[in-house]
Image (cartoon, rainbow, N blue to C red; front, side, top):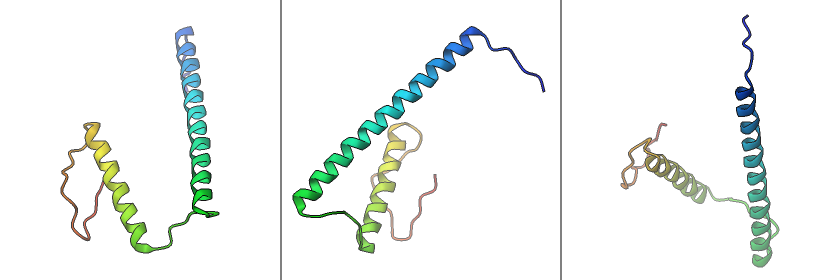
Length: 95
């Protein structure tokens, strides 16, 4: 196996990448704490201790909505062209 010497520029780029990943991780953790506080507040206002989807129909609706949102995001990014027409029952989406 041949090993290549890393240049100072390579090390600097890696260091910058590590810092960027650390910043992203910290941002995600901050967002999670915010969402947890908001959820706790909303549950408290509703007089609930936890939130859980129990009905299959609502779970399917949310799953379909989530897939649609992912498809629209791919459309926005120019990765996938998505129409606004609804899918027929039984249709599947492959990415």
